[in-house]
Image 1 (cartoon, rainbow, N blue to C red):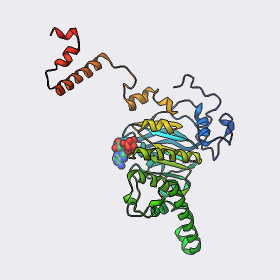
Image 2 (cartoon, helix red, strand yellow; image 1 turned 90 degrees about the vertical axis):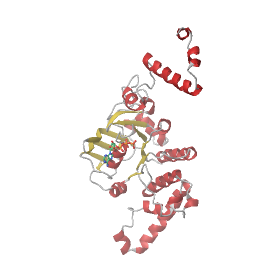
Image 3 (spheres, rainbow, N blue to C red; image 1 turned 90 degrees about the horizontal axis):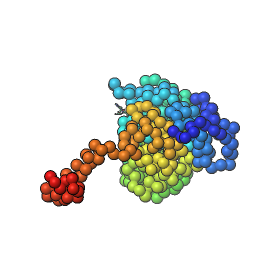
Image 4 (cartoon, rainbow, N blue to C red; image 1 turned 60 degrees about the vertical axis):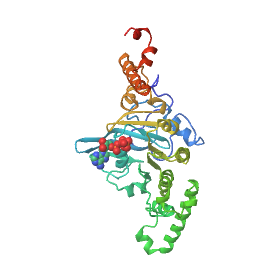
Length: 351
Ligand SMILES: Nc1ncnc2c1ncn2[C@@H]1O[C@H](COP(=O)(O)OP(=O)(O)OP(=O)(O)O)[C@@H](O)[C@H]1O
């Protein structure tokens, strides 16, 4: 926790109801609409207490009492979560913490046992993924869902489904549909250029590298002009060169005013791009705060970063480490371990 966790300047006056579009300077300490989006999100979150369930100045997504069990296992049990509009929120936690299940629930890919959640104040419960996407909340998957036997461009056009040009309407007025199709193709090509995939537009998605598929998936998600983009491990399996490019694209989403929620295991990435970090363990949210708060939080250190993250080794642990080292060196030397014995000093020489 911060030395002084009491908010000053910004007031955490959110009530759980979404605040509508735009920011609320009167609630967030006087920044102006001329500021860069990144700065707006950071300022909005700057003075909030580092508390689980803390109200955000302008939440885009609000989750209340959402639980999901599989048999006897509670995969998700989130009491209250607000996601600040226009910011990048990192969702972290050990394997099996419930991150993907929470994504599935929020985007209509799974249904919870209990709970409600909303986007801009509108409940998303019982909606299909398609309906959720049309409202402006899209997601990508840990394992990309690019259709390998469709071309890159065809994959992009699929991402545009659900906008204007519904089948009924399109059948009645084919001219309008054709105009829509042309518009979608232009939009797809713009996005492919942005993601440096335009040269591959006619290649089958199955021929792309893992990193290129991740780029395609992100580009495809943008076809429906989302307001909230949820990325499930966007950097996993991506080579270092493309990682930088993907990170840049994620930051771009924020620059364009989108709200980003992403799951990531790499803490350097989380620290680099997150305005706020939410930590899950065993289905629950165990901590929330700016990136710098996370390594200082004992619950997180215990659950996620390892119990002895920053703590010095105990005498017993040191003995154990030394014993293992001795064994390893003895094996490698192919000797009886004299090397170590002589290095350990006088207390060992009289054996
Ligand atoms: N369809 C399912 N049926 C049964 N158990 C499931 C199902 N989906 C998830 N689970 C279980 O729910 C728990 C949470 O899984 P989830 O995939 O959400 O975790 P996660 O935090 O995303 O993990 P990872 O970082 O490994 O992706 C795990 O114990 C998982 O085995």
